[in-house]
Image (cartoon, rainbow, N blue to C red):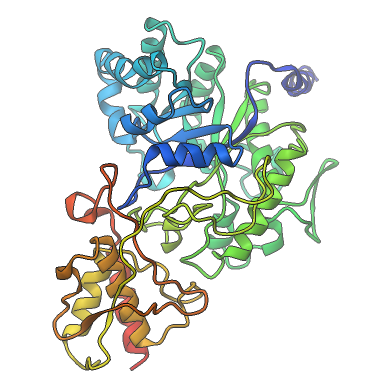
Length: 482
C-alpha cells in the first residue's frame, strides 16, 4: 500500500512542476550537401512560430545565427565525443567554455546540453555503456564551474527502446530494459538531483516500418477501432502508449515527477511505401493539434514539451536504418514546404526566403544510349553511391519511373549534388544535359541550391555518409525492367 500511495503522489506531483517551458520545437540537422544559410533558417523557424531548436552538435555558425533570436536552444554532443568527455574533466570544461559559455555571452538562449544521441540504442551493442554517465557528470560539473547550471540543464536524448512492457501491450507494465536498468536508474537519479528532464525520441513510423502487421490507424491521432484499456486509461494511439510506458517506468522506480521532453517525433515523406506526403501531413497535423490543445497523454494530461523531427531533408544522412532517413523534413532541402501544416501562428508552413538555385538544367540518360551497355550498371551504382537515390524504389515518389527514368534520376542527383559541374554529367556514352524538366507526377528531378560557405559538398567529406547499399538495390531494379 505504501508503494502504491507513493506512486500516486509522485504522479500527481507532475502537475505542479515549474521551470520547464513547453511549446513546439524542431530538430535542425546538418547532414546535407548544400545548406541554407543559417540566418535564413533562423528566420524560417521564427516565421513558422517555432519556439525552440534542438541541435545535434555545436555548430558555430548556427549558434551565432541564433544569437538574440528569442529561440530556446538545446545543444547536442555527438556520441563519438563521449569517451573524451568521460575521461577528462578538462575536456568537458573546454567544451562548455567553447560551445556554451561563449554563445550564452553572445545572446544565445541555451537551455540544454544534450549528452550523446540515443547512445544506448540496442544496435550500438553497448559501445557507450561505460562512457555515457561519466560524460554526463563531467558536463554537469563544467556547467556548475561556469556558473551556468541553473540556466543550462543536462539531458540525454534516448531512444524509446530503453524501456518496454515485456510481452504486455499495457503501459502500466512498463519498466526500463533489463540490460541497462542499473545504468538508467543512475542516470535518472542524476537528472532528478540536478533539476533536469528525461529526453526520449518516439517514432510511431518505426513501429509501422518494423512490423507489417502493425495496425496503421494506431500510429495516428484520429481514432483507432481497438483502443487499449489499461485500468481505465484508454489508449487510441501508439504515441500515448509509448510515452506512458516511460511514465510508468519512471514512477515504478521512484521518479514519477521527473519531467519528460519528447526530443524527436515526426514522419518521413519518401523512401518507403508508408513514407509519403499524405501520411506525414496526417501524423504531424494530428500531433500539432494535440500540442496546441494541451491534450497530453492519459497519464500526463496537459502541455507536452516536444521537438518535431525534422526541419529540412538531409541528403547525406546515413540510410542504414532505411531510405526514409533522408526525408524527415517538414521542408525540402531548399526550404520549400512539403505540405499544409499549421504549427501555431500560421495556418500553413512558411518557406525559406532568398534561396538561390543553380541553372535550370538536368543531367539525364541520353536518348541514344544503349541499355545493354555494360557501363550502365556501373555508372548508376557510382552515381547513387555519391548522391541520393532514395526516392527510387517500391512505394516511393519516383517508384513508377521506367528503367530510363531511373537511370536519369540517378545521373541528375549526382549532377546536382556536384554543383552541375560539366564533369558530373560525363557518364561514358550514356548522359546528356537537358533544359527540359524531366519531372513527372510526384517524382521531382530537383535543381540544387547554390553552394555557400555553410555547405558540405559530397566531394569534401560527405561521400562516406552517402549510402552505398542503395546502389545494389537500384541495379536490381534496373534489370527488373529488362
